[in-house]
Image (tube, rainbow, N blue to C red; front, side, top):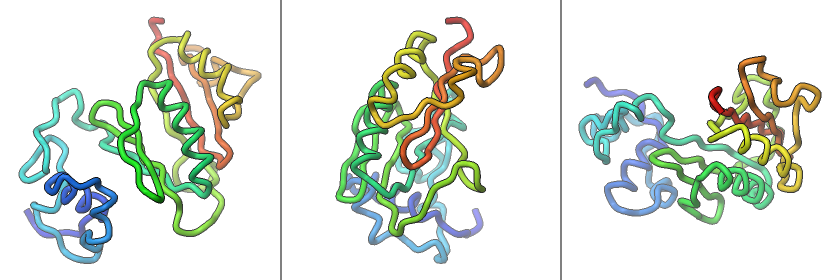
Amino acid sequence: MAEGRCHEDGAAQWRAMQTGLPARLGRASAQSESEPCTDRDRLFVGGAPNSGCDAVSMSECGLFHHVELRVEDLDAARDAWGWLLARLGCEPFQQWADGCSWRLGSSYLVIERAPRSGDHDRREPGLSHLAFHARSRHDVDAVWESAPEHGWSQLYTDRHPWAGGPDHYAAFLENGERFKVELVAPLST
């Protein structure tokens, strides 16, 4: 495969898997994005050569490996995201001075202190929101009801739980840094 530019986090994650160190500890020595990378440095979907992990199942292929969010207030984000992700069945995964992560299966979400301050606006170019599967309508309703006590504002209250349309039972929430999440119930529940 031709050489290309490495994604710094991918190279750091690969090194971490090879050395057994937490991924964040490997970042300081991670290859820069401008340096060429070889197949050994890439992370491949499907467990391709030297990906540092076993082949992923076909049901995982194409799913997110991880999502990393930069936040200004790490303590507030840890509380709000930690509560929500625990409700969704995620478990604490990693912790370091400037961040933490939660894992569910082979996917994980990272919250990390931003190196500089600035406002996140989901309506501007960039990330709009993250949508999560919920187990049932009951779970969507339970999270919706208790979300304000845990740093999340309820969005589209006048249209809840059908703000996404008549065939889309969901809760839309936003935290103090304006990150929006959507919790979607299966149609059959």
